[in-house]
Figure 1 (cartoon, rainbow over the protein chains, first blue to last red):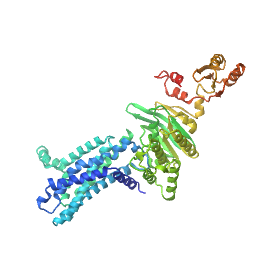
Figure 2: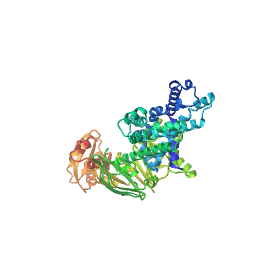
Figure 3: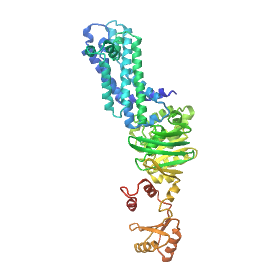
Figure 4: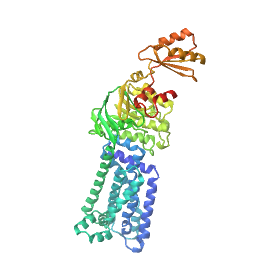
Length: 244
Length: 322
């Protein structure tokens, strides 16, 4: 059987073997609801779309995704099970991919469980469901981006708290890069080409486009490349740790 | 077949493993001995492919562990130090996972699973979550995991640590059985194990090999090799014997233990003390309910080899206590 699939199944099951999965899902759904209905003013807007729901996802992920990613390698290193995993006949890539896909799938399950909000908006009005599907896809891609960053930082330490904080910090930098406040600030100092480069690295810029229902190949390529980059960095970190 | 060539591992300024070259063939059970921190685990981790050597090569079943890691790892079973596993899984799930990764399928998989569960006595805990198991059971789960694919090469880092005497015995029996056609490397600091299990012992100190021979040859290095040890019934006879035996030309030294009424005659190199001592017992008509010829004391050889002379606790001081 494919090694990636074997590892994927073990990892995904391990989420549900502990309270972690349930606690995470409950908190994720609870916070998503608060942001959508209280902060986002879902009802007050009087519009049949999920903008108030999706616009808070970057901030939700910033805090919650590191909680998934922090344990990916740090826990294995701390408990010593990494020694077992790395001496099984798996390549480094299979191990990285299996773990990442399981974490991503778990985040996807949490995201999928927000479906009542989609039912609600369909009940209340007639939204553009194509745009909503696109926004879900964008949200999932962004979750993958946050996860891949957190995974790499988790590989670098045996301490889950450090893994959490560094992942949140780096994630914050990737978010902030597209924030108008920051862009306006650097626009005064730096040439436009660099401002564009910074903006193009941001989760915000790419997520916003997709969340409005515009699936641009460039945004897909961006998230794909970002994830691939951080996964490669994870493999590199693990390889360096091996030779340390 | 395992060969290591000029294997070294450096951590910062410290040379944990220093230029190890040895090879092990199928049928051999190699005991890897050394004080804590001597480089045992580091060496085993390099052989198993968990850490990369700073210099040198390891080849397992003909595959270089750095260049063809998957092929090399496929042919070996490895029990890491402390027998780590996934605590949240049940024993059954864990063994299934390992069987899947090891590519076991169909009848072979059912058969091997049944064999390891039976041999390691895991049937009673098979549906239990691993983190709720005792240390002994966890160790056995680790062994089951290392054995499930019936590997040609077995690397066991302290397999009997934390087991009770019965379990230790069972694990040693298992290793002895496996060794008929397999290659086993066992690290341990329990010296009695070496004699029971190993056909060969390597002692390392400060990352270097200081001895590589059969357990019997190691014992022959001991000053107690062919020493005669006797027990007396009466304290006054012990006193008399101590004086008289010390005068024998074959005897280098006499050590006595007044509490146990025991006396050990350490021979001069190559001398036959047994004949001389028995003669003197008969002559004086002492009551000696116990008399035996020692093969040598591994712990004493171990201390001499792994402690530089004059360091901290001296071998003589420790020897007097045992």
